[in-house]
Image (tube, rainbow, N blue to C red; front, side, top):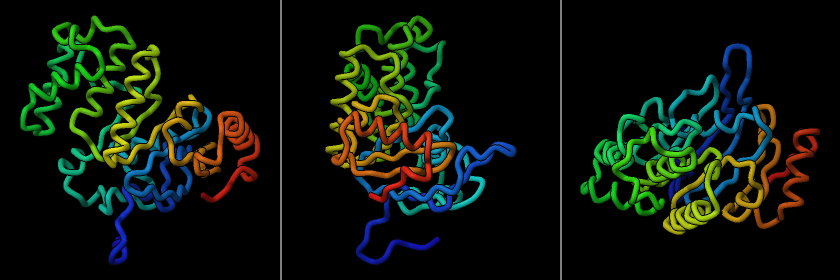
Length: 252
């Protein structure tokens, strides 16, 4: 692995020729992407573009078929797993929560797993942050889909990760919960966290992001500063990328 030059901070996430195959199908095809520490990236593209696969690779849950991945300058295949995992928070389509536990017990389990010094206090604070303090003693199986999403968000941010990976985080949220999430992500960003958010909500993506990256059919086809785009122009870019991926590319 090549270290970052002296005086230059290693990027939070680095993909070089990154590919992931499932049998003959290439979910990701030779992705080159560098995400500096503290940047907020909106990850866009149609269904099946490879967004979830890229987030799972960044979360070190799966390994690439080819290419190189670095997380804070470390190769996940060689780094010690537990300390690296503590630096990452992933919100996936799976909640990673347990139906037979209460909301509070779920968060307490993860607080202890991450070795937080005041696990009960951290779990209660996380419940309050997503507006579920009055349902903390109810079993997860009694929660609505939106409440489960809110608890999954609490789990994701519980340990103040410095890399936050979000897969459609606004799914199932009512307007109040969406506003809470915007505030939490804005706070994480202000605190220096690196965020990558896959979303179909173009407005939310632009409201939060420094940069917009578009995937189509496993390929990176567009990479633009968010300040250059508004929702109509971003929608046009995504539609063009889906129709003509080779014409949509623009370097940041």
